[in-house]
Image 1 (cartoon, protein in one colour):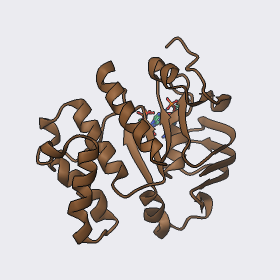
Image 2 (spheres, helix red, strand yellow):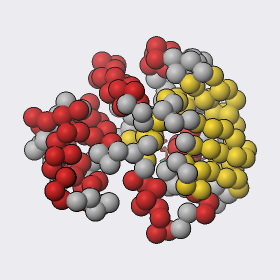
Image 3 (cartoon, protein in one colour):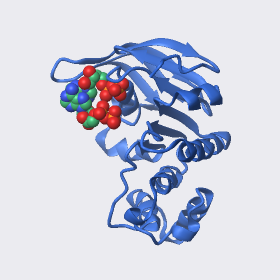
Length: 228
Ligand code: ADP
Ligand code: ADP
């Protein structure tokens, strides 16, 4: 599903954020990306959804060779990847329904199927009854659920989540993890950067540890491995 070959990322200011990363992530895998602040986790995630491009090396995601991807095909790639952020990034003036529908409008999904599909994913995340609320009238956990609904509405093959529980209390975080686990169980590949030791040590999925731009550990049913 995701294949990286000797991937380097050097930012224009000279920071070597990733230094020779090679790995494969298979369809339906759930992968935690851990490591200290500044290690390169966000850069790794951004390369997958092509927010950044590698300075050197090859990345393919779901059969798209990102190095050869034409500008006009970027929307096609993005439709295959759902992205979730720590700070939710919902549009504040739109309701939960409209935030999710917007993701379908962007890819020009047929209007006829839109309403049904949006309500279906809002139901899946447990927010059908709050479809008409704006983000400011939802709790943090509920806002993240809307963001998850938005991420899955177009049936992506991969979900990239950058510290999705970073702003949530432990109980709410577990609710979000349950939801992501269920989405993964239905076949979606999930790559999630996290500092949540308890979640990583309880869920026991594949763990990639990144330090100083290098993958220093890659374990199936791995552990968090840090004290922070
Ligand atoms: P993490 O997500 O593990 O905290 P990042 O990928 O955000 O790590 O950052 C890796 C390194 O690259 C850090 O030294 C960070 O300061 C640097 N960095 C990240 N984004 C940029 C950028 N846009 N320009 C310059 N340096 C950056
Ligand atoms: P995240 O919450 O995704 O880990 P970061 O804190 O790593 O975000 O970065 C926030 C934004 O600032 C990103 O767009 C990143 O590319 C940029 N950034 C991070 N570190 C640097 C840096 N050293 N110089 C310039 N931009 C940076």
